[in-house]
Image (cartoon, rainbow, N blue to C red; front, side, top):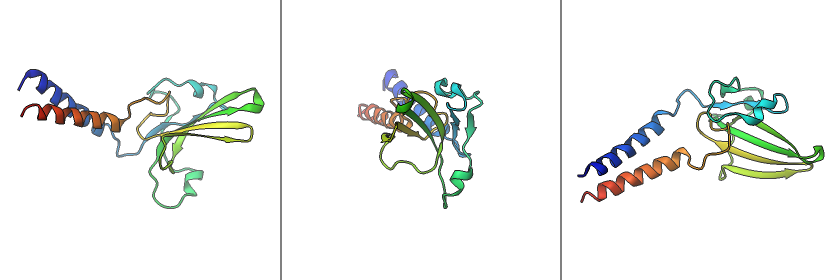
Length: 153
């Protein structure tokens, strides 16, 4: 086995471990704010866990209305309000009823258009969505490890 193959295999295993180890069993932490009330909510730095908006998701008045078990996730909503000269608002919060198929989706109501994105890791609703999510990193790592092991034969 060459040193490169060993390095490649160990790197893949390390990535998988990091992805699994960084999952929190205590509940997800999301940015929770509304740019209507605090303009700095619109431009958060990625993964700034020192932000006052970074809080653990917990039941509130809205989620209490939903009976049954809840698995919280993070959500970011960008609203374009047409009758206010295209004003853009950003709402970041916890969600508990995910869209069944789409990570991001749009809908238009009278006078505004909403883009809603949902994500499932701590601090994921800060900036623009990253291209590679945790599942993509795990899949690529597993594939890389399998190819490295296969090449040993």
